[in-house]
Image 1 (cartoon, helix red, strand yellow):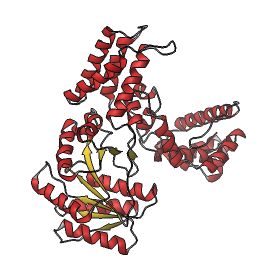
Image 2 (cartoon, rainbow, N blue to C red; image 1 turned 120 degrees about the vertical axis):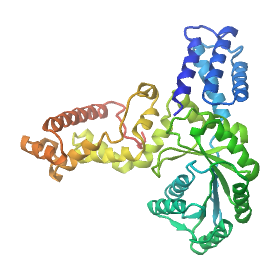
Image 3 (cartoon, rainbow, N blue to C red; image 1 turned 90 degrees about the vertical axis):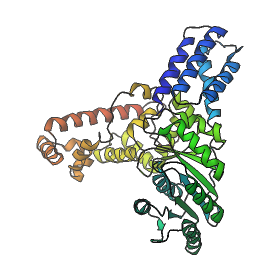
Image 4 (cartoon, helix red, strand yellow; image 1 turned 135 degrees about the vertical axis):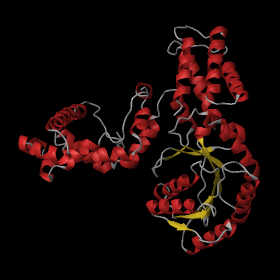
Length: 440
């Protein structure tokens, strides 16, 4: 995500490397490269020009203190301006009502239906709501089927009326059904088209007028770049939506939509989504996104993802086991499974400052742990709890059960021993290590 933009901005800041002060010449060269980087990222020229003028105005006349280099100061200025361009701060999301009604709109293929399922998961598991999904796309049977599958995966109810071709009537009936069945949020998935057309606009506007939604979210495929911004403007002119959702951020996106959609329609980005998994939905934080674009990582989001998966009580128990050198294979398997729930491994590593650039060309397979899990699952409960019990014959049996060579099992055992020793060493330090989700 934004890899090309990040690299070009980093190159732009090199104009100031080795400089002892900011002057008109090095500012001009840096600004020119920043503007070119933004335009290459599919940012509208007018917006790129206005952005860089703001950066230049803030940089001119800045005094550089001894502890900060000109390059660091310019990065800070650009970071602040990127944050402001994308909205300044995280927008609120209103899911309160009797019931709250969330209307989802967007073009066909934007990831609208998948997002509807992800939002239901977020409402249920993060906000403690009881959502009802509504299939108001009466033109594509596959859309209704897809929403039904997603509803089943989340564990929420789907409301649909087979044979009814009136989406307004379906939406109104769904709200009545929600009130009668104690559903406090109604999420309505509307029909999309391959392009903006009058019939679609009239239909979704009619649904809006009939149900008076609490939130109207416009879903945008971020891979479409500036076209997404133009589509958002067309929808906003008719719907006056309350927020934007950017999908497919894990794809080959140049970043133009994320950077400029707030500026263009003056509506905040509320959620960002990547992948197909239902838990890959995040609240959009402009400051965190600016940090990631500038290669600073996003430790805050990484810690939040960890806290959502790691139980603090269990983490304290695990810490005691590590201090006593009792960390076993079952503990390791549990940790692996929790890490996998946090999301795409490469994306998670990219949140660590400095790591994203280092691994940009490295292919990190999310299935990298499958072999290790297979080996541990081939052990008996006694063997998992007692790593020192693994005799050559036991290892041979484990290798056969996991479909591995004996050499692979031995290599894993050696790595496990080294990891145990490192954990013990870290926990013996004055400011001992902490597991994700634990407070000092």
